[in-house]
Length: 301
Image 1 (cartoon, rainbow, N blue to C red):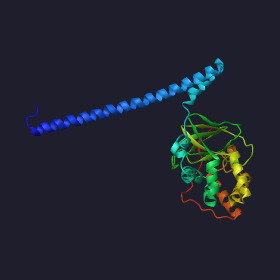
Image 2: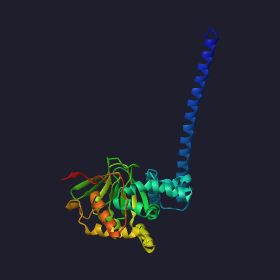
Image 3: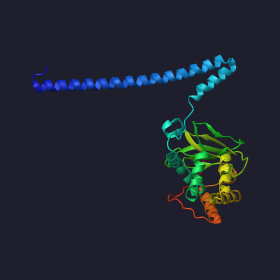
Image 4: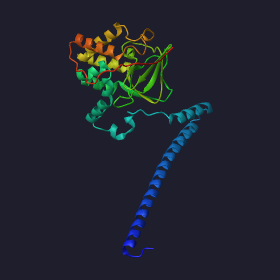
């Protein structure tokens, strides 16, 4: 029991601090439980609305089961790291800010490839158009297939998990016959898909772990080339020379990987970029970061 005014003051202060701390703790728990309850109610309402829709429209039991199974798996679909479409503020940014944000999101990915990195300094509006209109994103679960042999290629793939793209841990595994190639953040695959119409995958690719992929869609890429060719863009001339060199130069990888999703290494891509630059008569600023060996063998039997 407090014996004097100082002890009474100390006891009252401790009681008040304890009361405030306990109240804050209880309040945070209550807020968290309320948020969880709201999320659960929203999910329950979505399920109810879907079931009611299927019932009111006399959907067959077999199709109803298939739809409900898809709805269950859809909840677990990965969002990409650049899934800004679900953020209202980002979607409603002024066009100038949207353009700057897309540039900072995707230009570091492009810069890892000598040809596309060169386009940024050669014709930035063209590079910005590629980012805005020809690039899309995918997110893969561990073990999920990115593509399979003989499937028609949708475009070229850039692996883009890290914003700084310095992670060395493999994200994807490309397999062709007895050869497996580990692919890490900052690397690319299937460049031939945007150089050759109707190109099909010549190998399988699966995710080692969660992987974010940026896809340069072939049809949209070709549409942009046509648009800028009409405008007389020097970028189109540069890309045309690069594509010709790409198709004429023997691949720099081992024979079993020739003309596959792993067509050339970074050194060869850099050399072709320099030749294309000279052939097009343009000056391309090269980045200060040193290029590293692109492909790493994980297994050869």
